Image 1 (cartoon, rainbow, N blue to C red):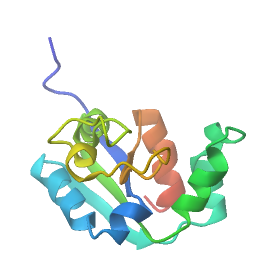
Image 2: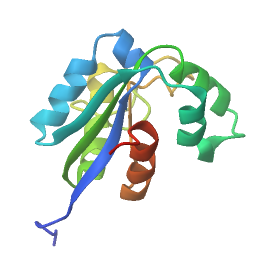
Image 3: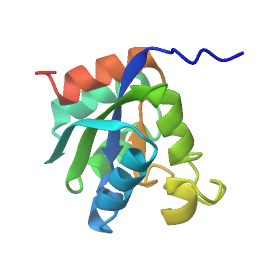
Length: 145
C-alpha cells in the first residue's frame, strides 16, 4: 500500500551540456511540469571545477570521472530544483535508464537521447538518486535555497 500523503520532496535536475546544446531544456522543463512538479529554481550556468568535484565526489578515481567532469564543463548546464511528492523517484522514472539506447520510450532519454557509443554520460539529464543526495546536490548548485 502506498502512502498518498508522502512528504513533499525536492530534487536536483541538470540538463547536461548535450541537452542544452540540442535545445531540449524547454522540453525537459515541460515534462517536469506536466508531471505536476513545481519548478523552485532554474538557472542556466557554466559548471565550475569546485561544484563538479563536490557533485561527483563519490566517483573520483573511477575511469569515467575525468571524462564526465570535462563533458560537464563543455557547455552550459540548466540546473533545476523541482518539488513535489516523491519527486526524486518520479523524475528518475521520467528520465529513464542512463543508457539512451535501452531507455524506455516515453522517457526523456528514451525519446530524446542518442547513442554516443561508450559516452553514456552524454545522456541529457541528471536527477538526484535519493532525498539525501538531492539535499546535498541542491546545496552545491543553489546554496541560497
